[in-house]
Length: 399
Image 1 (spheres, rainbow, N blue to C red):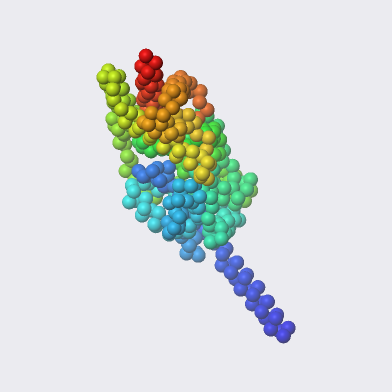
Image 2: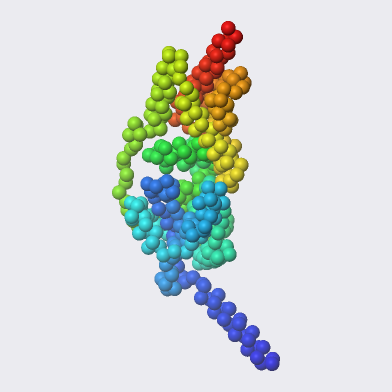
Protein backbone atom coordinates (compact mmCIF):
# COMPACT_ATOMS: atom_id res chain seq x y z
CA UNK A 1 0.00 0.00 0.00
CA UNK A 2 2.87 2.38 0.88
CA UNK A 3 4.50 1.59 -2.45
CA UNK A 4 1.31 2.39 -4.36
CA UNK A 5 0.81 5.64 -2.38
CA UNK A 6 4.43 6.70 -3.02
CA UNK A 7 4.07 5.97 -6.72
CA UNK A 8 0.83 8.00 -6.88
CA UNK A 9 2.38 11.03 -5.14
CA UNK A 10 5.52 10.81 -7.30
CA UNK A 11 3.56 10.64 -10.53
CA UNK A 12 1.30 13.50 -9.43
CA UNK A 13 4.23 15.76 -8.52
CA UNK A 14 6.10 14.76 -11.65
CA UNK A 15 3.08 15.50 -13.83
CA UNK A 16 2.53 18.82 -12.06
CA UNK A 17 6.15 19.87 -12.50
CA UNK A 18 6.03 18.88 -16.17
CA UNK A 19 2.84 20.93 -16.60
CA UNK A 20 4.43 23.96 -14.91
CA UNK A 21 7.58 23.50 -16.96
CA UNK A 22 5.54 23.41 -20.19
CA UNK A 23 4.08 26.80 -19.29
CA UNK A 24 7.45 28.49 -19.02
CA UNK A 25 8.22 30.93 -21.82
CA UNK A 26 11.36 30.40 -23.84
CA UNK A 27 14.17 32.93 -24.10
CA UNK A 28 12.90 33.91 -27.56
CA UNK A 29 9.47 34.95 -26.29
CA UNK A 30 8.44 38.54 -26.98
CA UNK A 31 5.49 40.64 -25.93
CA UNK A 32 4.25 43.48 -28.08
CA UNK A 33 1.62 46.15 -27.68
CA UNK A 34 -0.64 46.14 -30.73
CA UNK A 35 -2.51 49.34 -31.53
CA UNK A 36 -5.26 49.50 -34.14
CA UNK A 37 -6.03 53.01 -35.33
CA UNK A 38 -9.59 54.38 -35.14
CA UNK A 39 -12.20 53.16 -37.61
CA UNK A 40 -15.29 54.73 -39.19
CA UNK A 41 -17.91 53.01 -37.03
CA UNK A 42 -18.78 54.44 -33.63
CA UNK A 43 -17.66 51.29 -31.76
CA UNK A 44 -14.22 51.54 -33.40
CA UNK A 45 -13.69 55.30 -33.56
CA UNK A 46 -11.44 55.34 -30.46
CA UNK A 47 -9.10 52.62 -31.71
CA UNK A 48 -8.15 49.35 -30.05
CA UNK A 49 -5.26 47.79 -28.11
CA UNK A 50 -4.11 44.23 -27.40
CA UNK A 51 -1.03 42.29 -26.30
CA UNK A 52 0.72 39.98 -28.76
CA UNK A 53 2.84 37.04 -27.59
CA UNK A 54 5.39 35.52 -29.97
CA UNK A 55 7.38 32.51 -28.78
CA UNK A 56 9.08 30.80 -31.74
CA UNK A 57 10.54 27.89 -29.78
CA UNK A 58 7.21 26.99 -28.17
CA UNK A 59 5.42 27.92 -31.42
CA UNK A 60 3.03 30.24 -29.61
CA UNK A 61 1.60 33.18 -31.52
CA UNK A 62 -1.49 34.63 -29.88
CA UNK A 63 -3.30 37.82 -29.03
CA UNK A 64 -4.68 38.82 -25.63
CA UNK A 65 -7.73 40.99 -26.28
CA UNK A 66 -9.70 42.57 -23.42
CA UNK A 67 -12.23 44.16 -25.76
CA UNK A 68 -14.58 41.28 -26.52
CA UNK A 69 -18.00 40.23 -25.26
CA UNK A 70 -20.46 37.41 -25.73
CA UNK A 71 -22.92 38.13 -28.56
CA UNK A 72 -24.77 34.90 -27.76
CA UNK A 73 -25.93 36.21 -24.39
CA UNK A 74 -29.77 36.19 -24.61
CA UNK A 75 -29.86 39.47 -22.65
CA UNK A 76 -27.05 41.06 -24.68
CA UNK A 77 -28.88 44.22 -25.79
CA UNK A 78 -30.68 44.78 -22.49
CA UNK A 79 -27.44 44.37 -20.53
CA UNK A 80 -25.70 46.71 -22.95
CA UNK A 81 -28.34 49.43 -22.44
CA UNK A 82 -28.21 49.05 -18.65
CA UNK A 83 -24.41 49.10 -18.53
CA UNK A 84 -24.30 45.55 -17.20
CA UNK A 85 -22.67 43.96 -20.25
CA UNK A 86 -19.54 42.10 -19.18
CA UNK A 87 -16.46 42.29 -21.38
CA UNK A 88 -13.90 39.52 -21.38
CA UNK A 89 -10.31 38.68 -22.15
CA UNK A 90 -10.12 36.53 -25.27
CA UNK A 91 -7.04 34.70 -26.54
CA UNK A 92 -7.15 34.88 -30.33
CA UNK A 93 -5.26 34.29 -33.52
CA UNK A 94 -3.54 37.64 -34.31
CA UNK A 95 -4.28 37.17 -38.00
CA UNK A 96 -7.97 37.68 -37.31
CA UNK A 97 -7.32 41.13 -35.87
CA UNK A 98 -5.10 42.13 -38.80
CA UNK A 99 -7.64 40.83 -41.30
CA UNK A 100 -10.45 42.77 -39.63
CA UNK A 101 -8.34 45.94 -39.55
CA UNK A 102 -7.54 45.56 -43.25
CA UNK A 103 -11.23 45.24 -44.13
CA UNK A 104 -11.94 48.46 -42.21
CA UNK A 105 -8.91 50.39 -43.55
CA UNK A 106 -7.33 50.68 -40.11
CA UNK A 107 -3.59 50.67 -39.51
CA UNK A 108 -1.97 48.19 -37.12
CA UNK A 109 1.12 49.27 -35.17
CA UNK A 110 3.37 46.87 -33.24
CA UNK A 111 5.61 47.93 -30.34
CA UNK A 112 7.94 45.15 -29.20
CA UNK A 113 8.54 45.48 -25.45
CA UNK A 114 11.88 45.29 -23.66
CA UNK A 115 11.28 42.94 -20.73
CA UNK A 116 13.40 40.58 -18.67
CA UNK A 117 12.61 36.90 -18.70
CA UNK A 118 11.04 37.18 -15.25
CA UNK A 119 8.91 40.17 -16.31
CA UNK A 120 7.74 38.35 -19.45
CA UNK A 121 6.88 35.29 -17.41
CA UNK A 122 4.94 37.32 -14.85
CA UNK A 123 3.00 39.08 -17.61
CA UNK A 124 2.29 35.76 -19.32
CA UNK A 125 1.11 34.11 -16.09
CA UNK A 126 -1.09 37.10 -15.31
CA UNK A 127 -2.75 37.07 -18.75
CA UNK A 128 -3.18 33.30 -18.80
CA UNK A 129 -4.81 33.42 -15.38
CA UNK A 130 -7.11 36.23 -16.54
CA UNK A 131 -8.04 34.17 -19.59
CA UNK A 132 -9.41 31.30 -17.49
CA UNK A 133 -13.21 30.98 -17.81
CA UNK A 134 -13.66 31.86 -14.14
CA UNK A 135 -11.62 35.09 -14.50
CA UNK A 136 -12.02 36.26 -18.09
CA UNK A 137 -15.13 38.44 -17.58
CA UNK A 138 -14.98 41.91 -16.06
CA UNK A 139 -17.23 44.94 -15.63
CA UNK A 140 -16.27 47.34 -18.40
CA UNK A 141 -15.83 51.02 -17.57
CA UNK A 142 -15.23 53.30 -20.54
CA UNK A 143 -12.90 55.70 -18.72
CA UNK A 144 -11.29 53.61 -15.99
CA UNK A 145 -11.36 49.91 -16.88
CA UNK A 146 -11.34 49.04 -20.59
CA UNK A 147 -9.34 47.16 -23.20
CA UNK A 148 -6.47 49.68 -23.04
CA UNK A 149 -6.25 50.46 -19.34
CA UNK A 150 -6.22 46.73 -18.54
CA UNK A 151 -3.07 46.27 -20.64
CA UNK A 152 -1.37 49.13 -18.79
CA UNK A 153 -2.35 47.61 -15.46
CA UNK A 154 -1.16 44.16 -16.51
CA UNK A 155 2.25 45.57 -17.43
CA UNK A 156 2.48 47.39 -14.09
CA UNK A 157 1.63 44.12 -12.32
CA UNK A 158 4.38 42.29 -14.19
CA UNK A 159 7.05 44.96 -13.79
CA UNK A 160 6.09 46.65 -10.54
CA UNK A 161 8.22 49.69 -9.71
CA UNK A 162 10.61 48.79 -12.54
CA UNK A 163 8.42 50.50 -15.14
CA UNK A 164 8.18 54.30 -15.35
CA UNK A 165 5.88 55.96 -17.84
CA UNK A 166 7.68 59.33 -17.73
CA UNK A 167 4.49 61.17 -18.60
CA UNK A 168 4.83 64.91 -19.10
CA UNK A 169 2.21 67.18 -17.57
CA UNK A 170 -0.40 68.21 -20.12
CA UNK A 171 -0.07 71.72 -21.54
CA UNK A 172 -3.68 72.30 -20.53
CA UNK A 173 -6.13 70.47 -18.31
CA UNK A 174 -8.29 68.01 -20.23
CA UNK A 175 -11.43 66.27 -19.07
CA UNK A 176 -12.38 62.78 -20.12
CA UNK A 177 -15.01 64.36 -22.37
CA UNK A 178 -12.37 66.60 -23.91
CA UNK A 179 -10.07 63.63 -24.54
CA UNK A 180 -12.62 61.75 -26.64
CA UNK A 181 -13.78 64.80 -28.63
CA UNK A 182 -10.91 64.71 -31.21
CA UNK A 183 -11.88 61.16 -32.15
CA UNK A 184 -15.39 62.36 -33.01
CA UNK A 185 -14.29 65.29 -35.16
CA UNK A 186 -16.00 63.92 -38.27
CA UNK A 187 -18.83 62.28 -36.35
CA UNK A 188 -20.66 65.36 -35.15
CA UNK A 189 -24.02 63.71 -34.53
CA UNK A 190 -22.39 60.85 -32.63
CA UNK A 191 -20.43 63.44 -30.65
CA UNK A 192 -23.66 65.28 -29.89
CA UNK A 193 -25.35 62.08 -28.76
CA UNK A 194 -22.48 61.17 -26.44
CA UNK A 195 -22.31 64.70 -25.02
CA UNK A 196 -26.02 64.63 -24.25
CA UNK A 197 -25.83 61.20 -22.61
CA UNK A 198 -22.64 61.70 -20.59
CA UNK A 199 -23.03 63.34 -17.20
CA UNK A 200 -20.83 65.34 -14.85
CA UNK A 201 -18.23 62.55 -14.23
CA UNK A 202 -17.11 62.96 -17.85
CA UNK A 203 -15.95 66.50 -17.06
CA UNK A 204 -13.50 65.40 -14.39
CA UNK A 205 -9.96 66.48 -15.24
CA UNK A 206 -7.92 63.41 -16.21
CA UNK A 207 -4.30 62.84 -15.21
CA UNK A 208 -1.77 61.95 -17.94
CA UNK A 209 -1.73 58.42 -16.50
CA UNK A 210 -5.50 58.18 -16.97
CA UNK A 211 -5.16 59.34 -20.59
CA UNK A 212 -4.11 55.78 -21.38
CA UNK A 213 -7.71 54.59 -21.40
CA UNK A 214 -7.47 55.58 -25.07
CA UNK A 215 -5.34 53.33 -27.33
CA UNK A 216 -3.46 56.22 -28.96
CA UNK A 217 -2.45 57.60 -25.57
CA UNK A 218 -1.53 54.11 -24.36
CA UNK A 219 0.80 53.75 -27.35
CA UNK A 220 2.35 57.14 -26.63
CA UNK A 221 2.65 56.25 -22.93
CA UNK A 222 4.53 53.06 -23.79
CA UNK A 223 6.78 54.99 -26.20
CA UNK A 224 7.95 57.35 -23.47
CA UNK A 225 8.23 54.69 -20.75
CA UNK A 226 11.37 53.08 -19.39
CA UNK A 227 11.82 49.78 -17.59
CA UNK A 228 14.59 48.37 -15.42
CA UNK A 229 15.82 45.10 -16.97
CA UNK A 230 18.51 43.10 -15.15
CA UNK A 231 19.53 46.19 -13.19
CA UNK A 232 19.74 48.49 -16.22
CA UNK A 233 17.17 51.09 -17.26
CA UNK A 234 16.00 50.54 -20.84
CA UNK A 235 13.36 52.02 -23.10
CA UNK A 236 10.18 50.00 -22.74
CA UNK A 237 9.58 49.92 -26.49
CA UNK A 238 12.45 48.10 -28.21
CA UNK A 239 11.15 48.55 -31.75
CA UNK A 240 8.05 50.06 -33.31
CA UNK A 241 6.75 49.16 -36.75
CA UNK A 242 3.65 49.48 -38.89
CA UNK A 243 2.36 45.96 -39.46
CA UNK A 244 -0.50 47.12 -41.63
CA UNK A 245 -0.65 50.59 -43.19
CA UNK A 246 -3.90 52.31 -44.06
CA UNK A 247 -5.07 55.05 -46.38
CA UNK A 248 -5.63 58.14 -44.20
CA UNK A 249 -9.11 59.61 -44.39
CA UNK A 250 -8.65 63.32 -45.10
CA UNK A 251 -12.32 64.07 -45.68
CA UNK A 252 -14.13 66.54 -43.47
CA UNK A 253 -17.80 66.88 -42.64
CA UNK A 254 -19.42 69.58 -44.84
CA UNK A 255 -20.77 72.39 -42.71
CA UNK A 256 -24.34 71.78 -43.88
CA UNK A 257 -24.22 68.27 -42.39
CA UNK A 258 -23.29 69.55 -38.95
CA UNK A 259 -25.85 69.51 -36.10
CA UNK A 260 -25.83 73.27 -35.51
CA UNK A 261 -27.04 73.84 -39.08
CA UNK A 262 -29.97 71.44 -38.58
CA UNK A 263 -30.87 73.08 -35.26
CA UNK A 264 -30.67 76.61 -36.70
CA UNK A 265 -33.01 75.58 -39.52
CA UNK A 266 -35.32 73.98 -36.99
CA UNK A 267 -35.41 77.18 -34.92
CA UNK A 268 -36.17 79.27 -38.01
CA UNK A 269 -39.09 76.97 -38.87
CA UNK A 270 -40.41 77.22 -35.29
CA UNK A 271 -40.01 81.00 -35.42
CA UNK A 272 -41.90 81.22 -38.71
CA UNK A 273 -44.77 79.04 -37.45
CA UNK A 274 -44.97 80.98 -34.20
CA UNK A 275 -45.07 84.31 -36.04
CA UNK A 276 -47.79 83.01 -38.36
CA UNK A 277 -49.92 81.77 -35.45
CA UNK A 278 -49.46 85.02 -33.59
CA UNK A 279 -50.34 87.09 -36.66
CA UNK A 280 -53.51 85.11 -37.39
CA UNK A 281 -54.28 84.79 -33.67
CA UNK A 282 -55.12 81.16 -34.15
CA UNK A 283 -53.47 77.81 -34.51
CA UNK A 284 -53.29 74.69 -32.40
CA UNK A 285 -50.60 73.28 -30.20
CA UNK A 286 -49.47 70.55 -32.61
CA UNK A 287 -45.97 72.01 -32.79
CA UNK A 288 -45.74 72.05 -28.99
CA UNK A 289 -46.84 68.43 -28.79
CA UNK A 290 -43.86 67.53 -30.98
CA UNK A 291 -41.33 69.88 -29.40
CA UNK A 292 -42.13 69.36 -25.73
CA UNK A 293 -43.06 65.71 -26.24
CA UNK A 294 -39.64 64.87 -27.74
CA UNK A 295 -37.90 66.96 -25.05
CA UNK A 296 -39.81 65.23 -22.24
CA UNK A 297 -39.14 61.76 -23.62
CA UNK A 298 -35.45 62.57 -23.90
CA UNK A 299 -35.54 63.69 -20.27
CA UNK A 300 -36.93 60.28 -19.28
CA UNK A 301 -34.05 58.65 -21.17
CA UNK A 302 -31.55 60.74 -19.19
CA UNK A 303 -33.25 59.78 -15.92
CA UNK A 304 -33.10 56.12 -16.92
CA UNK A 305 -29.37 56.41 -17.73
CA UNK A 306 -28.75 58.17 -14.41
CA UNK A 307 -30.74 56.06 -11.96
CA UNK A 308 -31.37 52.71 -13.64
CA UNK A 309 -28.07 51.78 -15.31
CA UNK A 310 -24.54 50.98 -14.17
CA UNK A 311 -22.76 53.10 -16.77
CA UNK A 312 -21.39 55.43 -14.10
CA UNK A 313 -20.55 58.19 -16.58
CA UNK A 314 -24.22 59.00 -17.24
CA UNK A 315 -25.10 60.19 -13.71
CA UNK A 316 -25.59 63.82 -12.62
CA UNK A 317 -26.55 64.97 -16.10
CA UNK A 318 -27.19 68.72 -16.22
CA UNK A 319 -29.00 68.39 -19.56
CA UNK A 320 -32.03 67.62 -17.41
CA UNK A 321 -32.24 71.37 -16.76
CA UNK A 322 -33.81 71.77 -20.20
CA UNK A 323 -34.89 68.20 -20.97
CA UNK A 324 -37.73 68.34 -18.46
CA UNK A 325 -39.87 65.16 -18.27
CA UNK A 326 -42.70 67.23 -16.71
CA UNK A 327 -43.45 68.48 -20.24
CA UNK A 328 -45.11 65.09 -20.82
CA UNK A 329 -47.69 66.02 -18.17
CA UNK A 330 -48.08 69.69 -19.10
CA UNK A 331 -48.82 69.19 -22.80
CA UNK A 332 -51.81 66.79 -22.39
CA UNK A 333 -53.24 69.13 -19.76
CA UNK A 334 -52.83 72.02 -22.17
CA UNK A 335 -54.64 70.15 -24.94
CA UNK A 336 -57.49 69.30 -22.58
CA UNK A 337 -57.68 72.89 -21.29
CA UNK A 338 -57.23 71.91 -17.62
CA UNK A 339 -55.65 74.09 -14.92
CA UNK A 340 -54.66 76.71 -17.47
CA UNK A 341 -53.62 79.27 -14.88
CA UNK A 342 -51.06 76.87 -13.38
CA UNK A 343 -49.95 75.87 -16.89
CA UNK A 344 -49.43 79.53 -17.68
CA UNK A 345 -47.08 79.81 -14.73
CA UNK A 346 -45.39 76.53 -15.66
CA UNK A 347 -44.48 77.69 -19.16
CA UNK A 348 -43.38 81.09 -17.84
CA UNK A 349 -40.97 79.25 -15.53
CA UNK A 350 -39.92 77.08 -18.49
CA UNK A 351 -39.04 80.22 -20.45
CA UNK A 352 -36.94 81.66 -17.64
CA UNK A 353 -35.15 78.33 -17.09
CA UNK A 354 -34.02 78.39 -20.72
CA UNK A 355 -33.27 82.13 -20.55
CA UNK A 356 -30.97 81.84 -17.54
CA UNK A 357 -29.41 78.60 -18.79
CA UNK A 358 -28.31 80.38 -21.97
CA UNK A 359 -26.99 83.37 -20.01
CA UNK A 360 -24.99 81.24 -17.57
CA UNK A 361 -24.07 78.59 -20.15
CA UNK A 362 -20.34 78.69 -19.45
CA UNK A 363 -20.84 78.51 -15.69
CA UNK A 364 -22.67 75.18 -15.65
CA UNK A 365 -20.33 72.56 -14.03
CA UNK A 366 -20.96 70.17 -16.90
CA UNK A 367 -19.80 71.03 -20.42
CA UNK A 368 -22.97 71.33 -22.52
CA UNK A 369 -22.88 70.89 -26.29
CA UNK A 370 -23.37 74.31 -27.90
CA UNK A 371 -25.01 72.76 -30.98
CA UNK A 372 -28.29 72.50 -29.10
CA UNK A 373 -28.58 76.24 -28.34
CA UNK A 374 -30.97 76.90 -31.27
CA UNK A 375 -33.12 74.00 -30.04
CA UNK A 376 -33.25 75.52 -26.57
CA UNK A 377 -34.18 78.84 -28.11
CA UNK A 378 -37.12 77.11 -29.78
CA UNK A 379 -38.22 75.70 -26.40
CA UNK A 380 -37.98 79.16 -24.85
CA UNK A 381 -39.88 80.78 -27.71
CA UNK A 382 -42.74 78.30 -27.58
CA UNK A 383 -42.86 78.46 -23.77
CA UNK A 384 -43.37 82.21 -23.91
CA UNK A 385 -45.89 81.87 -26.74
CA UNK A 386 -47.98 79.34 -24.79
CA UNK A 387 -47.84 81.60 -21.73
CA UNK A 388 -48.97 84.56 -23.86
CA UNK A 389 -51.88 82.65 -25.43
CA UNK A 390 -53.16 81.30 -22.11
CA UNK A 391 -52.81 84.70 -20.44
CA UNK A 392 -54.67 86.33 -23.34
CA UNK A 393 -57.56 83.88 -22.94
CA UNK A 394 -57.92 84.79 -19.28
CA UNK A 395 -58.05 88.49 -20.15
CA UNK A 396 -60.86 87.82 -22.63
CA UNK A 397 -62.80 85.76 -20.08
CA UNK A 398 -62.53 88.57 -17.51
CA UNK A 399 -64.14 90.98 -19.99
